[in-house]
Image (cartoon, rainbow, N blue to C red; front, side, top):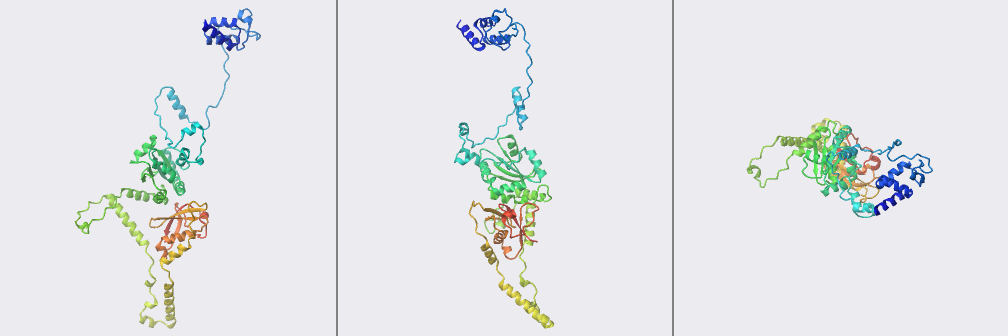
Amino acid sequence: MADQQEVLANFLAITGSNEAEALNVLEATDWVLDDAVGLYFASHDGHGGSHGGGAGGGSGTAGHSGLPVIPPDQDEVRAPLPTKIERLYGDHFDPRAVLAASAGQFGFKQQREAAPVDVFRDFKAEGEGSGRTPAAGPGPAGLSDLFKPPTDLLFNGDWQMAKMRAGQENKWLLLNVQSNDEFASHRLNRDTWGHDAVRELIQGMFLFYQQNSAVAEGRQLASAYRLSSLPAVLVVDPVTGAKLYERTGFVDPEKLIEELVPFMEHGPNDPGAIQIAQTQSLKRKAPPPAAPPAGAGGAAGGGSRPPMTEDEEMALALAMSMEGAGAGSSGAPAAAGSRPTAAAASDDEVDDLDEEEVWAAIRAQEAEEEARRNRKTPQQVQAEAEARLPPEPAEGAPSSCRVAVRLPDGQRAQRRFNKTDKLQALSDFCLTKLPEAAEGRAFELLPSLPGSTPLTDMEQSLEAAGVANAMLLVKWQA
């Protein structure tokens, strides 16, 4: 009885009807509250209130509304709901998420891919809504921003799309496969990919694609290119998909720039790309240099050397041909004394000359001797060039920039300048690094991008010439 009283009280509170009408409805539905409430509102068509006549069943109307009372045992045919058109998704709708949800709803099995986790993310701070920013001081939020991937450099798409885009733009494909378990991966994001010169190099000559071993595509790339350890940095030919360059672990940004210089000369679609691919392939296949013999008789009595493979012979022949070409093109100019002069002529030849020609030969000889006495040594030329260099600005100065040059012998030199310094200062810096140039051999500076023209206006500032924080090439003039 107590339960019926509670149901009656709830019914009266919900419907607002009188007690007599409530008892009639509850008894008709066997004291089931939900059914009683539904029957009440169905019979009154949404107009509740106290209706004495309705409770007695004699009036045939529901209170003052004038609407007919529908008997409980008669089926009600309600009007259809009005049509509504609503937008359930935004501009960046991904249908794959809907398909995945539908597959889960209907029991289809699907393999769910684990997304890479930001290991420096502070979930507690996010839950508390602390709003900490990296500028607020050291902390996990600052570390997350410090080691974040270079999203502005990365290609947004899969590996096949990256190869297609790189081929269309005539760019080499720079691939970085990372692992969250290796701190070297996070160092690459912070130190290497955040370096200004590296970023400029990537934007100009490469299409950058980064993948993590936590996802299936990252594991497939590591397996396809036989990566023994992670992280790994590779240069891939987008046309053939061949690996041309590989470095594992952390790579210093300056070292990376130096090793990527050969790829600046030609794009993958240029005719010279074949030579780059062959050279890089020989470098990867070349055996490490053998240790020198222990004694003087090591070469003769140390046993016969194993025969060279075909790849070794090709690498040796290529190295010898390049060395011969360099020796033939890098020789110093002949000494002035090697040219035949009037002083070298015999006495009989002098006797045959007239007086005017004799005095002309004497004056030429004296002028040559005077020029030889006044000629500066290469050490003096380099010392004067170094003295003309402007002071090197401090690290991090607002107006400073760093310029790196690739010398003809393959070595690399760099220095800090002010952006307002002239190109002549950069030429003097190269002169201090090139003894052959100090002896009189002419050279030229040009940007590292393919098809660039030499820099000729030495009075132009570094910023105006577009070489601030850039990599330049030094070539001997023909």
